[in-house]
Image (tube, rainbow, N blue to C red):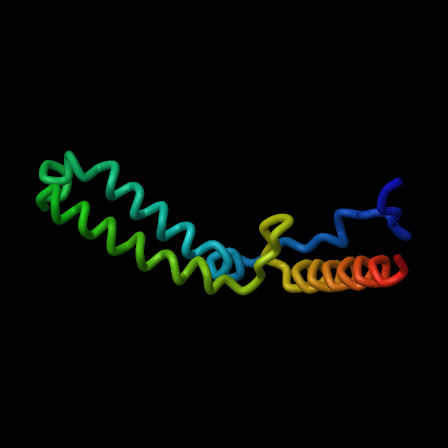
Length: 110
């Protein structure tokens, strides 16, 4: 029992996402990584950057809070897997709607 595809998956069917799409999708995550890096180097920030540890930590915290809305505004959110393809996210939403319909139909029959 499993999903049977009418045509087998081939490499030519899978297109690679562009850099713009990747940055749009994962920008918040990348900004959060910068915040983590600043937090990690904060104890040595005075020697490395010439700013106090407190100031470095505060900058890291601000950057972390900026990354939250950026992450939540990503264009294609798919709970199964991370995706940058709009079609994959739309198909998943259709699948969920179909499953919910089948569930409700099954409940009505009982």
